[in-house]
Image (cartoon, rainbow, N blue to C red; front, side):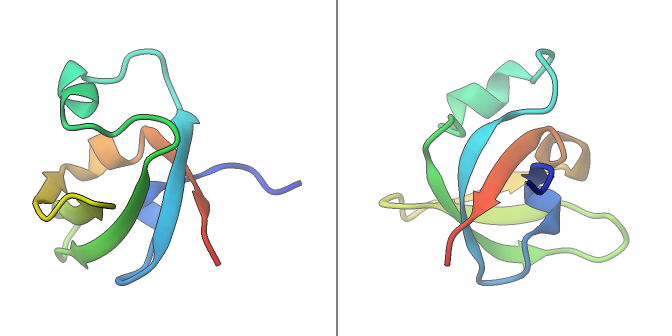
Length: 80
């Protein structure tokens, strides 16, 4: 069994489903943005030098930007 990965491990264009969180101390804005377990997301862009990560949530046309530290707290399972 492979250990859970965070959003930080997605490559541009890859999709995944959120399975949970690495810690119970997840910032409230993560929940407010709709990044809940079971949600399907797609990596849009990763900025260089450990910069923000830009993702899309399925059925939502708006892009979401996350700091790398926040994205690392969100665990995912890759979709085929």
